[in-house]
Structure formats: C-alpha cells, structure tokens
Length: 265
Image (cartoon, rainbow, N blue to C red; front, side, top):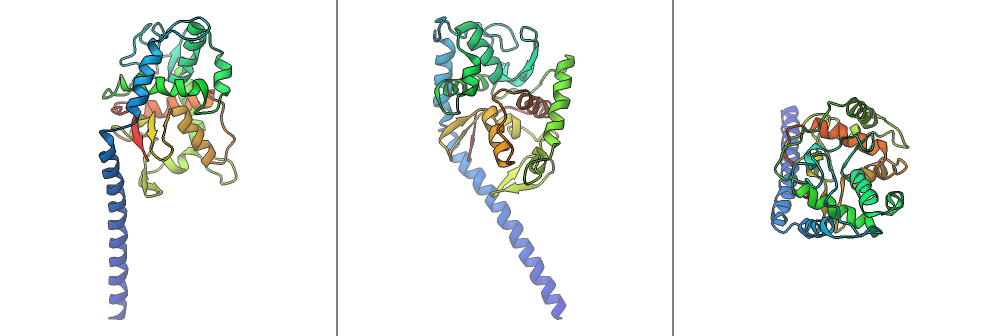
C-alpha cells in the first residue's frame, strides 16, 4: 500500500511538471501573439526601405542596383535563397556580407570599418534595418538555398562541422542546444536545427525584434550572441564561419516558411 501511494505521488508530480511546462510554453506563445500585430520590426522595415532607395555614402548612390542573387535591384524572393555563391566576389555570402559588398562598391563605404563597428552603432544600425526590410519582402516564401556550386556545398560542410564543434570552458557546441528534440532554456523550446524545424522556426525567424533588448537583431548578431553564451571568442562580422553556419541551417530549413523579421523575447 505504501509503495502504491509513493508511485501515485510521483506520477502526480510528473504530470504536474509536464502540465506546467506546457502552460509556460503556451504562455510565451500567447505573449508573442499579443505583440505580433504591433511588431516594432515594422519601424526597422520602413527605415530599411528608405536606406535602400536613398543616395548615400562617398559616391552618393542608392543600393537599388545591388544584386542579392536574383539580379540587380531584385529584392523579393532573394532572402530565402541566401547565403549563396556570388561570382563577382568568388565567395559564398549571406545577406549581411552581400550588403557590405554593395555598400562598398556602389556607395563607397568602407566595408571593413563597418564590419568592425559594434552592433547597435553607426552603419551597423543601417545594416540591421536593411535586413529587416529585405527579409520582409520574402515573408511567407519558403527557404530554398542553392547548393549547385561546389563552394556552396563546401560551405555547408564547413557549417556542419562548426555546428557540432565542441569547445570553450563548458565544452559547448551549437548542437548542445539545437542538436536534439525537446530541449528547453528559460522556459522556451529550443528548435532542433539539424533538420527542418518547421515554418517560422529557427533560421526561418531571423532577423527578429528582441523585446528584451528593444533592438532588431540580424542573423549575424544572433550568432554572435550564441558564441558569447558558449564562452567562445566573438566571431568576426560576416566571417566565413558565421556564413557557413547560415548555409548549414538554411539548407536544413529547406521548405520552411519565413516569418522574418519575427518577434522574440
């Protein structure tokens, strides 16, 4: 009888814990839904469109002839096919690194100087606004990153190795948080990114507005913060490893619908 009571108590406690977890996840989902209609990312989108069309920089030129992979000036549909290989730079580029190329070649900005600028400062703010607008122009479309070029396939393999590489004082990797199903942190579900996590999840949700910081974060900034949490040295902005991680996650997200720029805690 005593054993039966103990087992019953344990089962009840287990059920209560599961119910609490579900209610926490549901609560966060409801919280996001309430804010979704007034996502502050819309302000960044408007600024990004303005920056795309505005004549700026030493050459006093707009970005309207920037080629994001679908031809000069074509924005719709470009985001869900990035990162990809660009023949004019002979490298695989994500959205941020490609924008740096255009800002330097078309407008005369110093791309290296911008890459060294801290997030939330100077032209980094412009870049994040541009990523908000450009990603919004592909909202609802499905990711389909190209893998036809040999460099795209090599970059995917580099991203895969980086994703599973363990190191730092806690022996963490990207896969420590995003390599298995049903992982949680701070009451939030962690998507498994080694396969397609579904529409609007993981890679398909960034860039995003972070309510906790009151800022728009691009994928480069999101990855930078992941390295911080792993206690790794910060990666260089638009570096090969961050682009490779984008290729790995983006290819794995094939067919997932983009909701970027999304809203995050």
